[in-house]
Structures are given as structure tokens and as C-alpha cells.
Length: 200
Ligand code: GRF
Image (tube, rainbow, N blue to C red; front, side, top):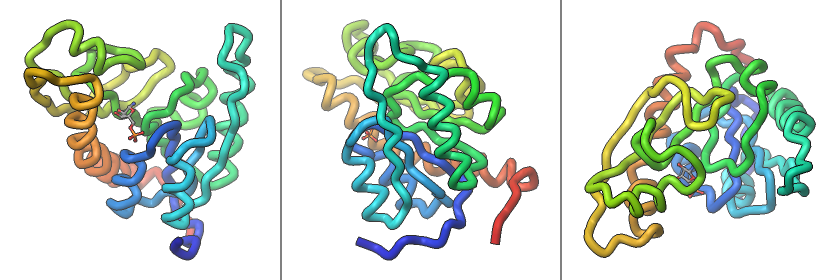
């Protein structure tokens, strides 16, 4: 385990899963202030092993009564507490409500494992496979309240190969995401640099 880094980051990363995209973001030495997860998951360990604060904002209700606005307020609070100025979603499994996009206008990024606008939604890789397309890919975009919409910053295609399973295809896409997403985040942060309040 590394020593905690000084709190110098501007980027908050939201994750729910294995955290391999998070690992790539951290490996690219992007200024990550905090990693917020909605459930216990490997992404938490990835953050801690890199010396970055990991905050579990536990989502306990996955049913119809889920209070999305209240949950979003807790996520925003966690991001604010760590001085976050831009957010990167990296496989975050909860759809957040308007408040996060209002608090960080035009500054919430997402990577999606398909060539948007094709195959929106959580099962994008499965949907591409079922549709029988010859290629799919990944899209980095500015996230908006409408899921998998928003201005596209980068896209790269990936072939669908004979015999592909959802896992094998997703892994081929993620290999690209691990390169494309950190590079796109880095350019994005540079482009908004004059608007960031840098702390020393
Ligand atoms: C990525 O494919 C991302 O596009 C999607 O979830 C996956 C996250 O992968 N939204 P990991 O948990 O970082 O390995």
C-alpha cells in the first residue's frame, strides 16, 4: 500500500465494479481527489492501494422506492468534501439525478462500452452481440441527466470476433477504454484548466 497522496486532486471518480478503468486513470497519474463507490467493490481497494481516499456512499435500495435525489445529494456532498471540480464515471451502477449535473455543469464525463448513440444502457455489450454487428467500441462523452447522451469527446471501434462472449468482447472494449478514457480526461482537464480553482 502506498502512502496517502496529499489532497491535490480535482477529479472525483465514481465506480461500482472491478475498477480496471479506475486503475488506468490512476496509472495515468490524473489528479484524483476521491473515488466514490455505491457498493462494496474492488474499485475501493484499487483506490486505497493507490493512496487515494475511497468513500462508500452505500446504496441500499435497488427497488422502485429508491430515493434517487436523496442519494445523489449524498454523492455530491462526498465529492464537495474532497474539493472535486470534475467527475469521471467509470462503471458507476447508479443513475444520478439532476443535482450532480447542476453542481458540475459540463464537467461530468462517462465512458460507455458501445459506439453511442448505438446501444445505450447498462447491457450495451450484450446488446451489440445480440444485434450481430461486426464492430462496436467505446465512447467517452460529457454526461447529462439523460443516460448515455451528451456531447461525444472520443470514440474508437473494436471488432466483434466469431465466438465472442459478452465477457471476451467487453474485455476487448475495456482494453481500449483504459487507454482512451485517461487520455481524454487529461485533455479535458487541460481544456478547462483556466476555470479550475487550483489549490496548493
Ligand atoms: C466499462 O466498460 C465502462 O464503460 C462501463 O463499465 C465498465 C467498467 O469496467 N460503464 P471496470 O469495472 O472498470 O473494469
